[in-house]
Length: 386
Image 1: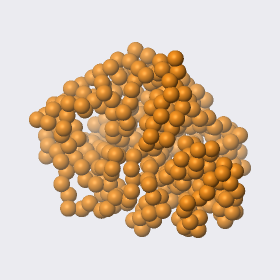
Image 2: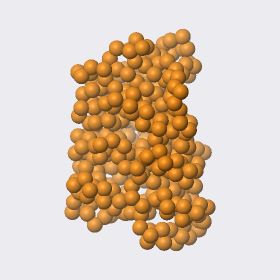
Image 3: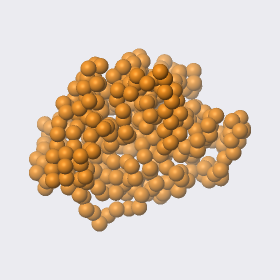
Image 4: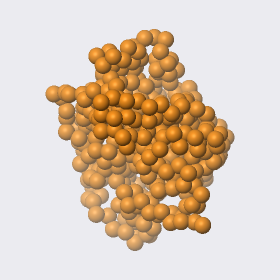
């Protein structure tokens, strides 16, 4: 029997099959990046994005092969990990892919059961259930591979009251710039290769119990030069949403092809973070040196009132302020959303961030796709990769 699940935080309401409840997910636990220099990356994410020092593991805590810095902002935790020797797997990952997301950790009530349910449905094991203990209790973690070399780690922390994980100590720092207003991870987007999107859609359906609740094809996501296809996967309570992109045929190279070339395989393309005040968040980020994609033309903003009127919505924000910051607006039957995208946050044109404020809308900015991808193509042209 189908059951209706409503998630207040995301406003997502959808009919889900009750049989999909074999993998209840409580939220995103942390996102771990493998990077070339974690200490310097941590300084960047604190300075530019307003993350706070949270936890640390490395030589000083008895870890001999790597260093990890944990940063926090509201419900978001990111881990930045660097190898301390050239032959370490973390170093090999960075050598191939550059800085990027390795682990998308999911908070669960029972990590052993999550691992058992997914591996018996075909998931490839990354780490068998492992109990980690210290004086604050224990955490159980287990991991499976998803697209490329990306991993989903199941984290069970109901019997733990320490700072982050056993082996980590609280990271005290005199330097903690003010947060910029990030609240939680809204969604994370993965790029996969040619004709692989449906394979991974089926994987998320069969292995994780997700549903495909939105799809976009190359007729909707295209410009004069390039195109892509995307399907949005969500778990039963709507707390975890993973859009999956693949390239589509176009006259020139798409942003997905560019990503796959420089990341050297499938991986996480961008992380969308939610805010309650996008004007303040983006203004603060710009002052701190974060670079965003170029501002859409005046003609884009001229059409916004009609787009909102079509769905009987009124914009609460000052459109001139949104335009000055390059923030885009889209609407659906439930409301509207405001969004903006950073340029890649490293030298390889791979990983970037999205800042999003949902004013009732449940979509992903389909009305903005053309303006967004034309902006990305202008950057590609400068890089000589279009």
